[in-house]
Amino acid sequence: MSPIGDINEGQARELQPVIKDYGQEAAVATVERALAQQRRIYDALGAGVLAAALLYDLGRGERLRHELRQYAN
Image: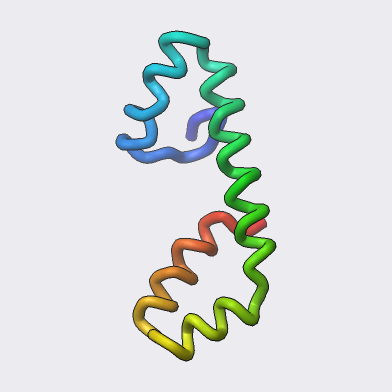
């Protein structure tokens, strides 16, 4: 596990320019900011929006719920 948690190969490649130009601390800070933003979005959605998505399209709603859970607090 890295200092910023588990990241996949694609995410690591995207961070390479940040690491090269600004250093590892900047890469960690970039990921922290992105995760904080994702948490705010997740928190703002609320259960009502997710419930409506599940009722409208169960398969798509379940996929979205799975993705959102990755960013839950």
